[in-house]
Length: 116
Length: 114
Image 1: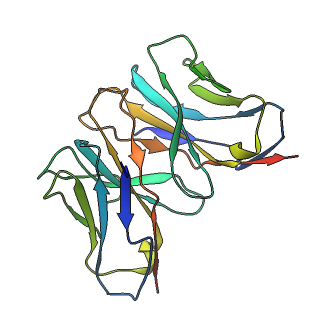
Image 2: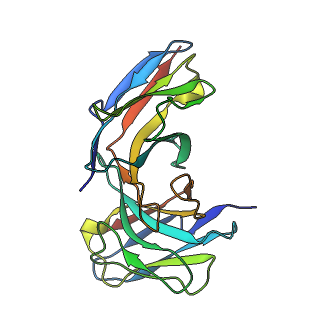
């Protein structure tokens, strides 16, 4: 079974600075998808960024980028120019390539605080 | 376009009571999911559906039943609630697009079982 590990329960960053959230996963599959979801205090889960394992290029979405190291099974999220609105829980998630439904396996989350 | 909605937002139950959580989506999505979120843990899949009239078990299905009689609705039932089912429940939906599909989540239902 696949597992997703987020070893940082909490992180803090100053506004306008850069922070990196870590995620490692375990799988025997060669093709899969990885995601970062954001959960603000409203509890709504919001997709931040997605990475296809067969793509070597790291995904980017505006201030959000990932460092995908397939051999190391590592998938970290970098947030640049942090803003107060980035404060939230961040969940890393894994999805196998095959399957009829997008069954996601989530990590335990990292709570990000953004300070002035 | 409301996206994914969940009813109710919060509920308190006594042990042994039953209830049904309703999830509705207006995006014509084929796939729907029910997750639970517990403190210190990520979301865990309870049941899911790949289309109207179909359901399947996820990672933690025990104590729950589901039904998908209409494409836009996915019901999660607790026949005899237990304190271990105290949790926040999230519904999600997606349109099949291989692995690139995005799951859209509802706002969650907080359930407290006494």
